[in-house]
Image (cartoon, rainbow, N blue to C red):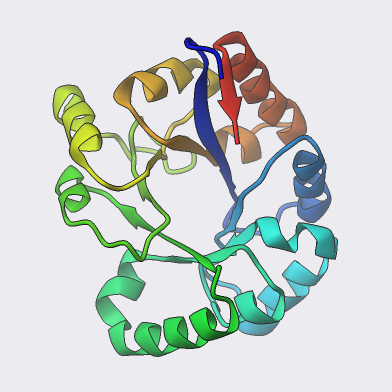
Length: 218
C-alpha cells in the first residue's frame, strides 16, 4: 500500500422494510466489490428471514451478517451475526447458549455489535470483530437523529480503543474524509443508498469518492 493510501472497511446495512428487487441490487453491489452486508429486518419472523436469505445466490452467503434469528447463520453458512443493545441487555442467557452453539457449528463466525456512547469503547470485549458507533453525523434514515459526539473526544476515544470502530449515521461521500481523519476502521452505509432513486448509482458515488481520496475499501 502506498504511503498516502488509506484502507477502510465498507459495510452496507439493509433497509428495515422490504425494498423492491433488494436482493438483486445487493448482489450487483457484491459483484462491484461489496464484502459485507448487514441484514437488519427487526419485524421479520424466522421463516420470512429464511425466505429472504434464500433469494441470494449461495456464493454470496459468506458476505451476509444477520441482526435477528441468529440460528440461521449456521444453516445458511453466513459470514456472521450482529448483537444489538437489546440482545446484550435482555437476552444474556439465550445469547450465551446461542453463541456456544453457533461457535461450535461455525468456529469462524464473525460477531459485531453497536454502541451509542464513546465510553463504551473503553471496555474491550474480544468477542466482537468490530463495533459500530452511531450516529456520527445527522442520520439520513432517521429524521432528527443527530450526533452528540464531541470531535476531539471522539478522535481520542477511537485512537485509545482496542476495538475496530465503524462509523455509522449520516455517512455520505462528502463525509468520507472526516471519517478517515477521525481514525475509524471503516464506515457503514444505509440511508444514502436506500433512500435515493437509484441505490446502485448512490453506492457507486461512494466508491468513486473513495478512489478520488485514495481510499481502498475492503
